[in-house]
Image (cartoon, rainbow, N blue to C red; front, top):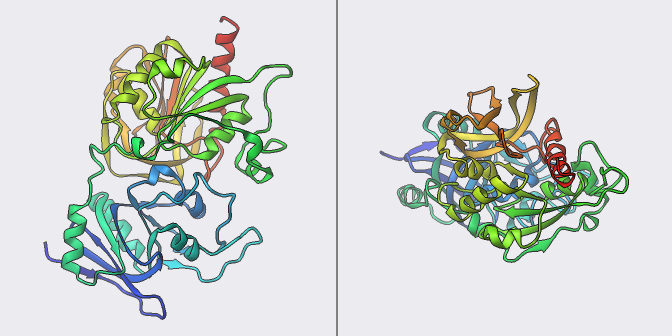
Length: 402
């Protein structure tokens, strides 16, 4: 396919840059953040705010993220609104990167933050046209570059980028060794991420005198706010690497196991699938996002790649038990195949109202539950926080011998 040049806005001082897609489309714009080059899967995110949480979410590893909100960076960055120690995206695409920072919480600008973190960004392109193309053609491999002016060269680089299909990224972004989460290290500001809001980060919701529930949390690319919510619900959390065996995890004497979000395709994560099969038969188990997909495969199901994925903070999901519609935060490109529910012991619990895809399931004869979306939000609504309480209730019942 011949290269197609799409809309460029002329202004000032930032150097020229381009975004090329594997279908031959090239968008002209301006460089911001680190001046360089990066390849990845090009996707779009529809949240109106929360760009720092998006940037630092390990689930976006290997992806060039496009924000559909046209004005990004206006409230700067700060050391509190992060989901990991650093930005995780491969590249960042916006319509307009604000040069003015207006927030009392800001410690710096988005431009400088990306530059210091080594993240290549591009602004000044028509993000509406890009989003429409991704919705029509599906998520595509791409390259952002401020150093290669040749469109044919850029398109070839996009076509040579790694495909997300069949790619195990969880083992690349996971922690290097087990560690214990200490909610006291989170500070007062983290309370804003919790719902209902406790008195401070990691605020205790346990009944008086109840000992914390020992939870092993598998880090497939875990967001920090998941840990905050587990701690606030009454859990003492030990985080373990993605490749930890079931025997190693059980050696820590957990009362429950949590399987986290993360990037990439779940099917190559055989190490995690094998461990999840053991946990699903022995302990209360809770999965979110990639953890949900891994549990689905462990329970006998399959997964498939969505055309352009679900990424945003306003996705409607129906809870089939209550009939309630929850507005949810989502970030995934793969989904559990509904064929899983041919098994009589697996119950569909949540459905996406936009496209009917699977958003949650539980086992009828074991305390196992999982959801595709993000009940911890950050960014996003807090409609689904009850799921952390359900996980704790399952551990409480097991402790009581019920």
